Length: 357
Image 1 (cartoon, one colour):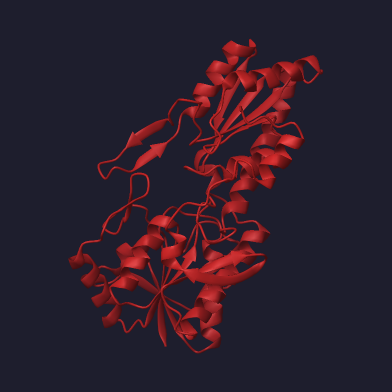
Image 2 (tube, rainbow, N blue to C red):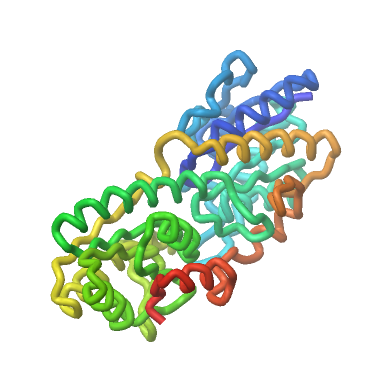
């Protein structure tokens, strides 16, 4: 049997671990794996791919990035704006499927977030056997408790906060750190708790900066003259809107800039010297954590198992420490957002973290 593998969307620590899992499990069955380069674009005629063998993928699970490349733009973008679905033109779908058929690919593993998996669902509906693997640092895919890449992103946030704390303490400053996550606050929430932030601002909880300022002033009174504030890129004030750096011609917007706004206003409200750091793509880069290496490998192995069982149109899913599967359409139907009244938020509040509400 010959199967295909591709990565869609932004890069993410753990992609090579998935490739390691797919190739390792497939080779045990005597299958061939064709890895398509730069995501779905590699399916366009005549096909841009490499044959993946165990001897060529040995040791890659510890590497960041992806040996296959990826793409979050191009002909196969299916998610536009805030949750809108774009139907891939039939001519492109037919060309891609024809490439797969000419190469005798019997099933395709698509690794990606909500956009890339929405495209995978369209391939499945067009009649081609597809299995999905969830990938996003944002952890915003429904129907899975965790996506690989999330833990590595949180590790980067915690490392940044550890470094910012020393300079904040030295100068009695307020340090604001803006992190990724789009419309979900998981990275800010977990990274902020792990990094000892006194305030975390997330999209799911509209904030009032005066509440954050009160927390900082109270810390000063208690003898803690420095403060760390984590701001998710999608956070917004009560009655206000999210900040966008740019919007492309397809209607896709890039969130960003709220950290600078928060820092500027906190400086006025508290009278303290305040600085903002935007962590940006450092959250996507570097080697994956041990958790993401293991999770990525398990996801790759499970994807091969789903193909063997002919359970197509499904996405690998992680629930209660078990790797199972769910229909792809169920996973991309809605975003996985932080519950403002959930246990994690309540735990953060219990140790004094302010959410601006």
